[in-house]
Length: 475
Image 1 (cartoon, rainbow, N blue to C red):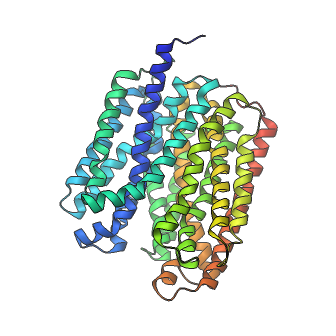
Image 2: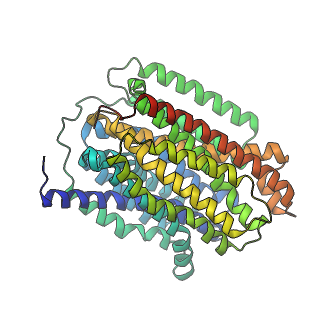
Image 3: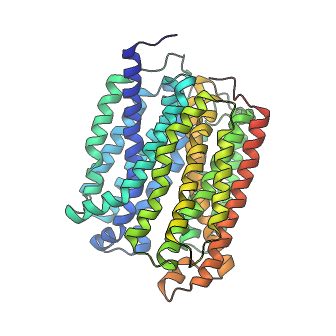
């Protein structure tokens, strides 16, 4: 069916509205870290304690993602997405107005509730309004916005804190949020398909939130050394038992929070697995690379930041192109090719040493950004196209959860590997006399392990490509 110019324009404005939400959530994740020392001094709290400004935000988002996707499939996406933007904007205002550390943490939770709603619904909205032949490119644009938010966050945060103060990093979200709310209210219609008219699984949702919350608190506590190993093991065991009960309970519900039968779809399951593996491997690189640049190559923080920025720049440029290619050449295994490039780049990065030139490092990071962009847009397109249109909300939220889980797992697993190889922690190493030889020993094993993990993702992607070269029947 031929579309009118007004229909195309309206659709693009809706895409712009979703980009605003993605930009705010991504910017807020990258802009806060640079201000933590300032916030620590302002409220007179320790560096370990101030990490909860980030942790509370991350925990809330990860625990709630799946819930919003299901609610959107039952009640629709327009109102819920608008509410999410409103809550995020309100949370940003409260963060800026905080007069105590406890109020700031509470405001960050409010902000995260709004962010979790928008993050869970963005992919479902894009999938609903864009036809199959143009969906990949739109998802690629989302990928570019993520890259831009990650890129400008640290530098923008530094400028704002220097000129206006730390509260400004939260206030900057407010005009973007208001604009997104108005665009969504006036442009977004509920999709034409009949939405599910079912009851919401309250009991399953409560158990899921407790299970995931315990798991993430355990993982983050292990990473930061906040709790003893016995406490962490106990929390992880309880989380696992609750999750097993959750799966058992969900299989017996007529309208479950998590429809287990979705995972019988091989395209959906294999694509989700590669999402988790991709982010697990990538966050090993993201966590340790700044230490290599600053402590081994002895670069100042500005130069190190500029070198690291070539990754999001490359990703931002290539993502729309790879999305467009996934629309036009569905049978080309773009995701597998991209993950293969990533794997090779991670392995090559494991050979870095104290004599490696900045140019060589940048070439490998560009290679990593190119592979990442080539993987993410086509893989997301495969996930969202593999489910029926009345399931895109929950599919998008599951995809977002897999991404967050991979991020947290990647950081924690890489830290554990580093500690096992070096017999010390990265914090202990950087707080005293830095041992470059010992660091490189752990660094190489971490990145080589990430490459091996990424190679498993290549294998899963190859299986998907071989069995389902044309993608899913749902478009």
